[in-house]
Structures are given as structure tokens and as C-alpha cells.
Length: 207
Image (tube, rainbow, N blue to C red; front, side):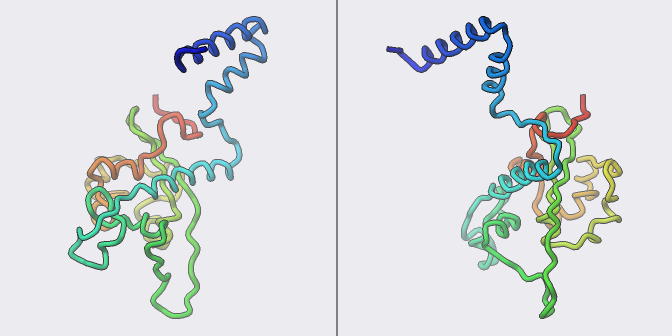
């Protein structure tokens, strides 16, 4: 009988190590690598699979909402999910089915489908998580010409975005901090910076 789970784990590691040695560190070593790195995302070559991977991050972050009641001067907003600042988390309100606004005030106007396109943006700071920009929730509310090409040139690498300029009201700061959610407290940072370094499945150029 084992006295603890730690004893079991030590025996398992020892057994696997011996087996790998006896096997000449061949196929068994690959099995060990599979076990050790079971939760590490594998490189994906297909664009569709990459989009699915990013969509997982987007769905996860859209659920990070705080439900508060009686915190607004407008009673109609009291039951809607709030962000850590106490403001309405409109993304969570849509995704969780609290609201379902019409695409137009004019009757009979067909609904425009949101663009399902996630953009990976590498953070230049080594320990800062990378950014995932979801077009879907933005195009749910806005048309493309709200941002392109006046604010963002729709071309990879053509927009030298920096947080300093964002805080000054440029780039994402044209809306965020004024119309959409504010940057602080820290819990709001992870609504954009959600892909940890090394897990982007993209080439990260920062050294």
C-alpha cells in the first residue's frame, strides 16, 4: 500500500524512466513527451482550426462578467452583467442572451451577419499576454467603415499600435475608454490580453 499520492507518482515516474531507458529512449520517449505535454497546444496549419482555437479564447473571455444589481442610475440596466468597474458588459449581455437588439430601426431591413474573424496581435512586452481581437462582437454593433481604413488599415503589420497611443485616444482608444469599457481595473485588461505567450499557435517575433 502507498502512504500517499506522492509515493504513487514517484513510483510511476521511476517506472516510466526505466522503461524509456530499456527501450533505448526510442518510442517510449515519445510517449513520455506526449504525457508531459498533453495540455500544450499543438501547432495548427489549417486556418479553420486556428480560427476555432481563437474562438475558444473569445468565448471564454466573453463569460468573464460580474453580475451586479442596483448599481446604475438607469434601472433598466440594473439586471445586465457588469464589468469590474460597474459598467455594463455589453459583450456578455449579448452572448448570454440578456439583450438581442435589432440591426436597424427601419422595418424590413435585412440583418447583417457579424464577421467571424479573430485577429492575433502580439504584445511587445515580454510578460504581457497577447491580444485577440474578435471582429464578430465588433461587427455585431458596427459597420466595417467605422474603423477601416481611417483608424485601422486592413492589412497585417500596417498598424503600429501601442498602449501609450491607445491611452491617448488613438487606435482602440477611439472607443474604449470613452464609449466601450474602460481599461482599468486590471480585470478589464484580460478582456483583450488573453492569449498567453507561447500559446498563440502563431510565430511570436518578440525576443
